[in-house]
Figure 1 (cartoon, one colour):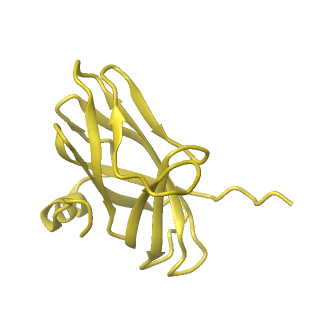
Figure 2 (tube, rainbow, N blue to C red; figure 1 turned 90 degrees about the vertical axis):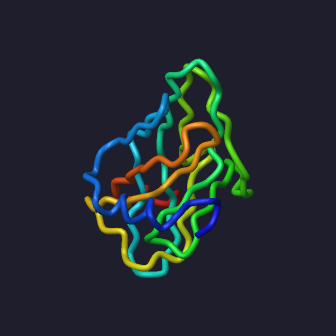
Length: 141
């Protein structure tokens, strides 16, 4: 596992219902992932991270077990090592901003399925997150 995410967290994710999870003053919400056509595809994941506390926290780790590797990348596609979530703010992982890159999926990501992921934060520790599979946008001609 990369980025400090443990197998115990992934097992807990598999047993948990598909809903937003909270830890400390952080909550994860509105997770989405593009569906894929075949096993081994790479896809993108998106999420909102809400910090309702009065201290900043830092996203330091991420792993979606359906993929061989999960990367956090910026809008330019270059890997990021961490992201700061300011107090009282919401950090949004979007298609045109920082987002997750799930590389070499073990199965297809089918429309309507839920992909469990684990996230590590500097202060809040490990938090479960879920990405709901939605249709990928049509490529522009």
